[in-house]
Image 1 (cartoon, rainbow, N blue to C red):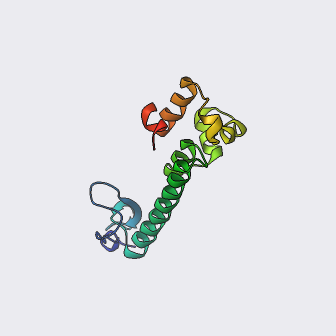
Image 2: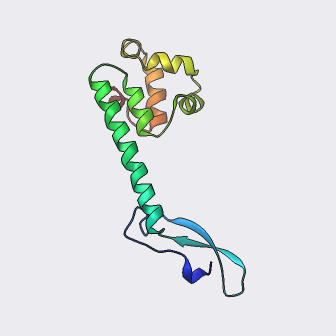
Length: 132
Protein backbone atom coordinates (compact mmCIF):
# COMPACT_ATOMS: atom_id res chain seq x y z
CA UNK A 1 0.00 0.00 0.00
CA UNK A 2 1.23 3.46 -0.87
CA UNK A 3 1.39 6.26 1.73
CA UNK A 4 -1.46 8.05 -0.04
CA UNK A 5 -3.67 4.95 0.22
CA UNK A 6 -3.51 4.59 4.03
CA UNK A 7 -7.12 4.76 5.28
CA UNK A 8 -8.14 7.96 7.06
CA UNK A 9 -11.81 7.37 7.94
CA UNK A 10 -12.19 9.95 10.68
CA UNK A 11 -15.80 9.25 11.63
CA UNK A 12 -14.99 6.23 13.75
CA UNK A 13 -13.35 5.18 17.00
CA UNK A 14 -9.87 6.46 16.23
CA UNK A 15 -9.66 10.23 16.50
CA UNK A 16 -7.13 12.70 15.20
CA UNK A 17 -4.77 13.79 17.95
CA UNK A 18 -5.99 11.20 20.47
CA UNK A 19 -5.76 7.61 19.25
CA UNK A 20 -4.14 6.74 15.97
CA UNK A 21 -3.26 3.50 14.27
CA UNK A 22 0.21 2.80 12.89
CA UNK A 23 0.32 1.34 9.40
CA UNK A 24 3.24 0.50 7.20
CA UNK A 25 3.16 1.77 3.64
CA UNK A 26 5.65 2.36 0.87
CA UNK A 27 6.94 5.85 0.25
CA UNK A 28 7.86 7.40 -3.12
CA UNK A 29 11.15 5.45 -3.07
CA UNK A 30 9.42 2.12 -2.47
CA UNK A 31 10.70 1.84 1.10
CA UNK A 32 8.40 0.90 3.96
CA UNK A 33 7.66 3.64 6.42
CA UNK A 34 5.28 4.16 9.35
CA UNK A 35 2.16 6.16 8.62
CA UNK A 36 -0.43 7.24 11.18
CA UNK A 37 -3.99 6.38 10.26
CA UNK A 38 -7.41 7.22 11.63
CA UNK A 39 -8.40 3.70 10.63
CA UNK A 40 -10.94 2.45 8.19
CA UNK A 41 -14.64 1.91 8.68
CA UNK A 42 -14.63 -1.89 9.30
CA UNK A 43 -11.86 -1.60 11.89
CA UNK A 44 -13.49 1.39 13.57
CA UNK A 45 -16.82 -0.47 13.70
CA UNK A 46 -15.15 -3.53 15.26
CA UNK A 47 -13.43 -1.39 17.91
CA UNK A 48 -16.68 0.39 18.71
CA UNK A 49 -18.48 -2.95 19.11
CA UNK A 50 -15.71 -4.32 21.34
CA UNK A 51 -15.89 -1.28 23.66
CA UNK A 52 -19.68 -1.52 23.78
CA UNK A 53 -19.38 -5.15 24.94
CA UNK A 54 -16.82 -4.17 27.57
CA UNK A 55 -19.14 -1.40 28.77
CA UNK A 56 -22.00 -3.89 29.11
CA UNK A 57 -19.82 -6.25 31.17
CA UNK A 58 -18.69 -3.37 33.38
CA UNK A 59 -22.30 -2.37 34.01
CA UNK A 60 -23.18 -5.99 34.89
CA UNK A 61 -20.34 -6.09 37.43
CA UNK A 62 -21.45 -2.75 38.88
CA UNK A 63 -24.91 -4.21 39.44
CA UNK A 64 -23.38 -7.32 41.02
CA UNK A 65 -21.37 -5.14 43.43
CA UNK A 66 -24.46 -3.13 44.37
CA UNK A 67 -26.38 -6.39 44.91
CA UNK A 68 -23.65 -7.64 47.25
CA UNK A 69 -22.65 -10.56 45.02
CA UNK A 70 -19.02 -9.48 44.51
CA UNK A 71 -16.62 -6.91 45.89
CA UNK A 72 -15.70 -3.67 44.08
CA UNK A 73 -12.47 -5.36 42.97
CA UNK A 74 -14.50 -7.39 40.45
CA UNK A 75 -15.92 -4.18 38.99
CA UNK A 76 -12.50 -2.59 38.58
CA UNK A 77 -11.03 -5.77 37.10
CA UNK A 78 -13.72 -5.63 34.42
CA UNK A 79 -13.44 -1.87 33.95
CA UNK A 80 -9.69 -2.14 33.36
CA UNK A 81 -10.09 -5.09 30.97
CA UNK A 82 -8.09 -7.33 33.29
CA UNK A 83 -8.51 -10.80 34.67
CA UNK A 84 -7.39 -12.29 37.97
CA UNK A 85 -4.04 -13.41 36.57
CA UNK A 86 -3.20 -9.95 35.26
CA UNK A 87 -4.23 -8.34 38.55
CA UNK A 88 -2.07 -10.86 40.42
CA UNK A 89 0.93 -9.89 38.31
CA UNK A 90 0.39 -6.17 38.88
CA UNK A 91 -0.23 -6.45 42.62
CA UNK A 92 2.00 -9.34 43.60
CA UNK A 93 -1.03 -10.85 45.37
CA UNK A 94 -1.64 -14.52 44.62
CA UNK A 95 -4.62 -15.45 42.44
CA UNK A 96 -6.30 -17.46 45.19
CA UNK A 97 -6.09 -14.46 47.55
CA UNK A 98 -7.58 -12.18 44.90
CA UNK A 99 -10.40 -14.69 44.41
CA UNK A 100 -11.07 -14.49 48.16
CA UNK A 101 -10.98 -10.68 48.00
CA UNK A 102 -13.75 -10.80 45.40
CA UNK A 103 -16.11 -12.00 48.14
CA UNK A 104 -17.84 -9.03 49.81
CA UNK A 105 -17.48 -10.55 53.29
CA UNK A 106 -13.70 -10.90 52.87
CA UNK A 107 -13.33 -7.53 51.14
CA UNK A 108 -14.92 -5.75 54.13
CA UNK A 109 -12.16 -7.10 56.39
CA UNK A 110 -9.22 -6.03 54.20
CA UNK A 111 -6.72 -3.66 55.78
CA UNK A 112 -5.87 -0.27 54.29
CA UNK A 113 -2.47 -1.27 52.82
CA UNK A 114 -4.06 -4.07 50.77
CA UNK A 115 -6.92 -1.84 49.65
CA UNK A 116 -4.43 0.88 48.73
CA UNK A 117 -2.47 -1.62 46.65
CA UNK A 118 -5.60 -2.38 44.62
CA UNK A 119 -6.45 1.32 44.33
CA UNK A 120 -2.95 2.07 43.04
CA UNK A 121 -3.13 -0.66 40.42
CA UNK A 122 -6.55 0.55 39.26
CA UNK A 123 -5.23 4.14 39.32
CA UNK A 124 -8.04 5.34 41.59
CA UNK A 125 -8.30 6.71 45.11
CA UNK A 126 -8.96 4.46 48.07
CA UNK A 127 -12.32 6.19 48.57
CA UNK A 128 -13.32 5.43 44.98
CA UNK A 129 -12.41 1.78 45.46
CA UNK A 130 -14.69 1.56 48.45
CA UNK A 131 -17.66 3.24 46.73
CA UNK A 132 -19.19 2.19 43.44
